Length: 392
Ligand code: SIN
Ligand code: CO
Image (cartoon, rainbow, N blue to C red; front, top):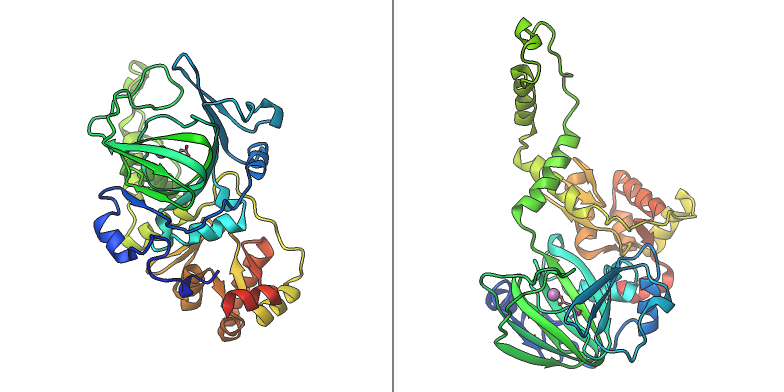
């Protein structure tokens, strides 16, 4: 799929990306009838259930019991442990399907009018009649694409959320929806973070949630501080030689001032400049999720280089790549100068592919890093057939 040949409104049912971003994004919900006309699910129910049985995949089974109590179980599941299809009020949710399936990754790529740094994943749910996850809010911008069957979405703003006690899910206690939409296959509903929603399957149905993280600052900061501390060049080891006075024997529980001074000085060294800060943030945002493993290539360096020279290359669907003013970040790793400023690598990050001509124009250093990524399975040379399809 070549993103650059798609109309500017794709997949927003004729609304331009610009209008959508100005009027709706992070402001208010938008229902898009036939956002993807004649959309057919990219995975069958059986394929989705198979994923939920895989121990490298994150999945959940949620049931609403007749008592009103909710039940949550986490995968992997065995096929026999899933409820019967005709049993109402249950749903199976599979996370990160874009990492597992090229067609779903291509669907996610349709949403790259939003920066990659915001992309989270595609979750796919299958629900029996009446199934859903209950009224809730998400810390995400989300596009809810109806893939099969029908789902009724009731949505509304939530000012001061209160949650039901003693439930395994964070469910809104007094959700008052103000809008009701019935979605058919190909319809899509956009919701900003914090917007209340409750989707109930009208007959069996499948829904794709294309999510964009909108984390609170403290969540990112926690991880950022951790990374900054990791990157801190090893400084002096703590020493209190000549610093412990004779009072310590009487007050051994007292926190020594020397130790506080020592750590406070180390903490001051943590404070990064702008470039370091953006590089660390990029490392963090490109870090592969826990369940992601790359398959190293079985080809030799010479074979990989030859294949790239003939047909170009593409990033693996699981690779995350960003760039900042002076660095290129890929799968949690940083390339600093001179590769950190390479326009070729920036183009690879934006287009997720390079042509044979790009390869010819690349410097030896750029080629060396590209081949290294192919060896690691972070990128792959195109086959002749793919190159014809993707790059023409
Ligand atoms: C679902 O697919 O049932 C849940 C999607 C959501 O509400 O975020
Ligand atoms: Co939700």
